[in-house]
Amino acid sequence: MRETEGEATALAPDATPSLDLVFDLLSDSRRRYALYYLNDQPDGVATIENLTKNVIALERSAGADEETTAKTETVSGHDPGDGSADQRASVRMELQHIHLPKLEDAGILEQDPRSETVRYWSQPSVEEWLEHAQHKETA
Image 1 (cartoon, one colour):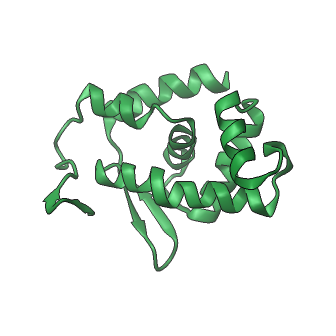
Image 2 (cartoon, helix red, strand yellow):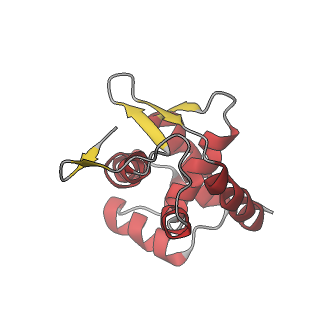
């Protein structure tokens, strides 16, 4: 697990994350979209490339809110619906440097940089709110 300022921040296997932490983790659409995909995987494992593609697909199908659209256009210079190489690189970079480390610090997942895979660790209290959010966003 990653460490922050010399102190481990990962959850113990039997620890329940606080409601504040759960809502903080689910507050960004790209983090939620990544978790939707990982939660749907039978073994909880996905490549970063597949995760990136699925986040982009969910943004497209959800109509990508204005904030996400503006963020992607600013970074890539392209419309988010085009699935360009620039957009994929931008989303991948944001996942690898912002969202996945935040989830890893919370003990929700683990990244393997060598194989470029992510393993999701089930947390019932996160999944309860994640399923509710997924139902509201994708229904």
